Length: 173
Image 1: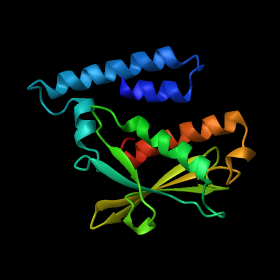
Image 2: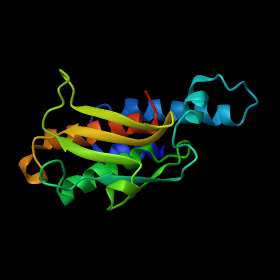
Image 3: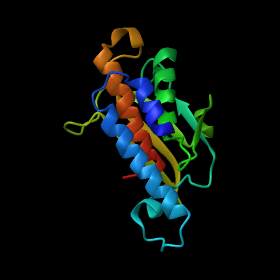
């Protein structure tokens, strides 16, 4: 339900909201049943939850680049930070915490003006250390550093894209 509330607050007039609510409630109910049962751990959602690379952390340190070249203005950074909170639910208790130092972050979010991949607006790159995930870097296509230069649809798309890529950074395919 928290996942839906975060989504609804970002898109109050979106016609997909009722379908999204049903989807989220079904997943949360399924996870609740799985966590409280003695069923084998091969259940898809339960396995997915346990496989998250950050599952042992409650606070994930996030750095949002604010440079003119690869970053976001304060308003856009706030929008992206809010988008990350969609994943903070009872079943995925990750709480994004902003840090000012890039080297402290487990997840870094930066702006790019070209990704290279055809029809791609976002990309999550993983940094491994001894075959373990050390850091995830989310690269988001955005034509401007500032919120004022973007249309409403570009802002909504950027927020949605950040939520999607943040899910990849959490380890979801």
